Length: 162
Ligand SMILES: [Zn+2]
Ligand SMILES: [Zn+2]
Image (cartoon, rainbow, N blue to C red):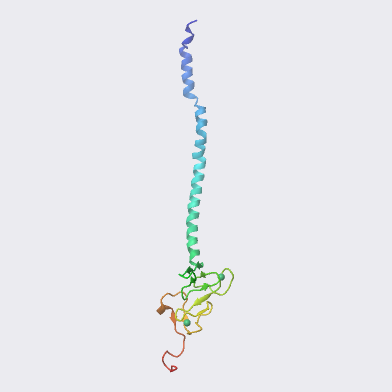
């Protein structure tokens, strides 16, 4: 019995045919998680990424809009006291500087204060005319020539008090 080592041609042919037709299942099973990842998770991930990018963009826009309408913390001067720009509403209690449209602190609802850029008198932000110099201001204006609005009345230097 020495012919057992060499298989007959027919068996060898069948063996070859089997290898060619039947796919390598173990190889496919190894690839399956990868295929799942690409075919299922891929689209999901790209959708999530798109949603995230969209969310990020809209959120950024929204944040910019909010920042324009929100109070900012006052800057401390050399002595450690908060310094408030003139002609801008602020809350001395919380050291917050408010946009010009606000008259109340959004923390405690207290009336905001405004400092007169001409004489430094502090008045209520809801009051448009300075108590001391009687000048009416456009809140938020930065240039003195822009912000001073003389009240209607006799022109300056007319019938002046000596
Ligand atoms: Zn406040
Ligand atoms: Zn004034």
